[in-house]
Figure 1 (cartoon, rainbow, N blue to C red):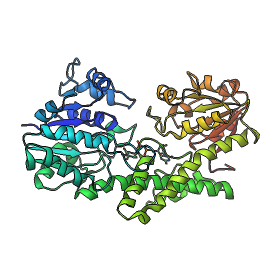
Figure 2 (cartoon, protein in one colour):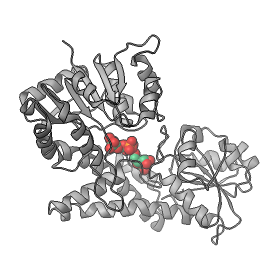
Figure 3 (cartoon, rainbow, N blue to C red):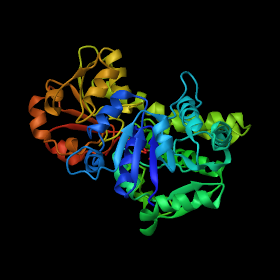
Figure 4 (cartoon, rainbow, N blue to C red):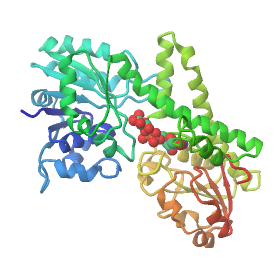
Length: 447
Ligand code: UGA
């Protein structure tokens, strides 16, 4: 009989995982504790913008015309326990308020709510990003609280999906990491992932701590790559180099690679910043803090970029204050193809300029509602052209395709001054200059 799967927590990770599991042919029951989320999902609507996710959901949510009916949602843990052979825990692990450490309260609550209902054999699979050592502790919680005792087992299976590519990354992952303690757990996970495994996706079997560490190590490496190129951008600024050419040239060495070497205002979002901080905090608890002190530098290079963008803008406006200056900000989300504004470098820069007296008008293709909620005092425009109308400077802060396709000549007609600052090194300087714009980017003082 086909496995029945439940997914606990239907945020980014969980909603995508649930839809993907239904796509792979399983019967799926998703659970969340937020009623509004469940109501939306039951209607086949996604609470965030993620390309392809709504289509996938509508293809499988029960009650939607023409759907497979394999995907349902509930708020009831007893129903989840009764239904599933395998329970994926996909709740979020944000940064603790006022601390670097990871807030485990949602994970702990999910385990505490599920376990007492587990009266028969089950595999619980953790997907959330957690500090090393958590799985070991949670395994004990499970067997302690579950009436089925040792028949309930834990596995740790970290998730590497990127926002904007969540569906693709979930259906066709570049690797599957399985932290397991028994052959049975491995067999079940191989059954769940039979389709991607048949496509050749590598399956890496590890113990619990390694599985937990793979995730934080991967995100730390990515953060390090970005801060490395941003540090090179700082040196290029000082020494007159061009960081884009530099990245291209070092990227030809395939030990280094071209990816994740785009210099600019740096990384943000709900993962990289909090994950490197939680990793440092955990290393400290384990007495291994020295091993990760470099991440402190990665973090500070990254945070410095935002201030440098503000200063570059001030300079472009004549070097004194922002008072009386109108600044158009193109982009609010932390990256394109997402509506996520969590720790967004773009909004941080917009906010700083606003606080220093600049008249900031923001436009983003998908992130407007979230941006307005977070920064209600900024100005917002309905289109890029409206944001640029009357501006003394245009800041390109999130590299949406829409912005690369703008017509600089038409924008020049409505701007007060033709000054564009590219915080993502993604616009074509020659096209903007040909239309009479002064183009300035980060890490390319003379480009
Ligand atoms: C990141 C990881 O890439 C995923 O593998 C991981 O699963 C996920 O976190 C997670 O932990 O859940 P994501 O946060 O969606 O995914 O975003 P990324 O694509 O990694 O981008 C992060 C930030 O780095 C963005 O603000 C982006 O603009 C910035 N970035 C990226 C650069 O500044 N330069 C680059 O070259 C690449």
